[in-house]
Amino acid sequence: MRVRKDAHCRIRAPILDCLHGRHNGVAASNHHRIAMKLYYTPGVCSMAVHIALREAGLPVTLARVDLHTHKLAVPEHGTDDYYTINPRGYVPLLQLDDGSRHTEVASLLQYIADLVPEHALLPAAGTRERLEATGWITLVSTELHKVFSPWLWHKETAQSTQDECKARLQRRFAELDRHLQTRQFLTGDTFTVADAYCFTIVGWARILKLPLNDYPALQQYLSRVAARPAVQEAMRAEGLVRD
Image (cartoon, rainbow, N blue to C red; front, side, top):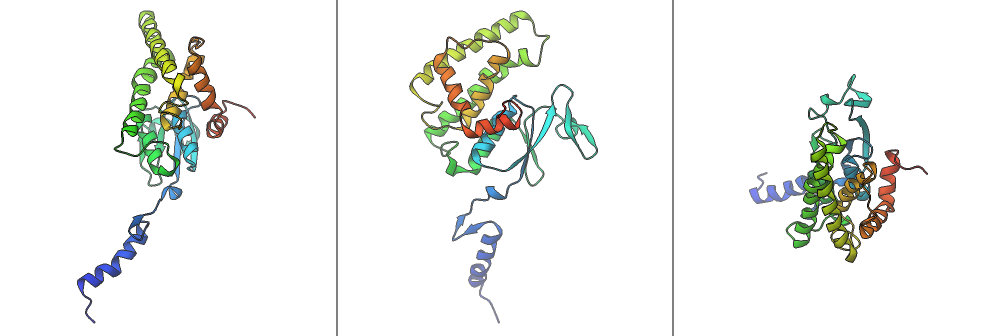
């Protein structure tokens, strides 16, 4: 029996749809099948990704890393040398179900949010709201995260440089405080992964004894984010809070 080409396509298409998770021409959500592994250090920037995963409701296995020694808490493949996992030596690193490994907080946050669009952890791509949210992610990365680094990881940094970093952080804290006087979260009344990042990094002020007393709206914001169940779960899993 001869099968017409167009008939063959009609027969083959549903099979391909099933293989690729599509039904009736619509791509089916496949995030429930994704098994991920997060390499983290308690309380550092990897916590933003950890919070995002919890907010997204995605299953994840945690692998703890000591950033001072670059050793894994639980050895893998016969070694505890974290450099065998990530030659760059830092966290976070997110390993996907296909074994691929990915770094950089800003890109990981957006990837996680896009896996579960129904959770609205970022606005839709191509919208002004998305532009605003990713703008905040970038600002946290460049104006807060990297400015904290001289204190946290580079104790040899000159005092004059540390003083300049402190002044720069205080200017950004003041900006955040003004912004948050009229909204619950960075982009309005909806929590996004930008808030997970901001909460994590601004929280370092306590470690370095940078007072936030002059920024009441920012303090209230931090408390509001900290009270979220997913944030509590992430902090508890990292040993930062107790029941």
